[in-house]
Image 1 (spheres, rainbow, N blue to C red):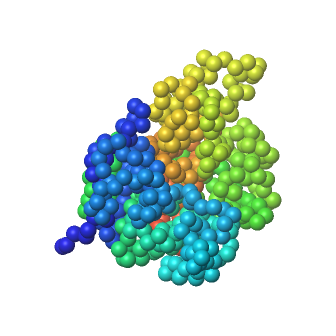
Image 2: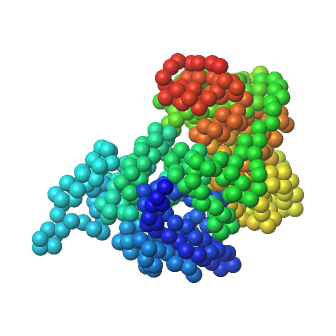
Length: 502
């Protein structure tokens, strides 16, 4: 087999930020016409590689080679001139400019006497999106586009500069299943045209579905590069974290009585006639596409939004919540999807974040004793193995995985009977996912009733005793853990049949 030419190489690249060695002698080669995965835990050096290729940082030593020639990338504009296009997790477009204007920003076609050739911009943008087999409103401002369509604008922009290398940094983090499928089809077409794609992702299922080769970084060092068909998920995880682990450590369920019973719950324009129950020690997964209404159900159960109809029973008693504090008092805790916006106060300490919902219980006379607060916070932080200096460390200084553990610790401190987890492993690395899965499994063995909302199908399938599937605000399937498959869940999630059980 003839090896493809290397379009871009890192050769013995190192980069230090203060006391942190972000990259240590990393060598990596991207070949023409391949999709190359770059994986590793948070802090492994992936983002530093991306920023060096984007021209944001310069390496301290080593060199970057483009087409076999060593280059100093002097900034983002120079990177684009070299044929390197970077698509960040959050698209970096000008929201008030049109789609076509964003595609040709900084390199607009010019008329003979120097003015911008607007008709040429429209024609060229139309050709680019036609090449991608995508229909796009060229005159519409980017502000109104979905995240998926904004990424397609970025890809069209890369094509407009005839990029030889496309770097995609966590491109699927905010996309639905269908949007991911469309994105992957386009990326494969780019590969077939000879573009080298560097695909940075925490989602290992996507790595195996899309990529040709994978490189692993750990602690700023290159560990391995290998064809994807010679690796397993277990191999990748072992290389990433340096030890053998079990990705979904689900303990056998020992179910008790029904703790949460929901009957005919509805909220106008969000969901309708939702009925299910959760027993003590049971993990019930709630699956569905983005917009199916899963989070909206959770918000009603936690008292954030009022229902229009239906009944909720806790341990057999009908309950009504007009606020989250009422839900907390009754024994329901909710770990929200956006830990930064809704789950944590980043400028507060770990201790303050964990005890914030229970200050009234801890200090009924409203006199906060720091020593008592620290002792309780330390108990929960230790139980969940939060990696920290101490509980007085600011939570904003923790890694994403450890922040998520603090969110879970915070709600466990309320001593709930029901724990609702909304996308508990989104945006955290594989090592942290393993830890969160372990924690969830252990909590279920203590008798906690858990509702697990997740867009990660392998996670839902592996961690749930039963799976509920929603489509456009309605339940379309209820499956036992043994009977559930990705195909059956996706069939129900796309509304292709009525309520099914198994």
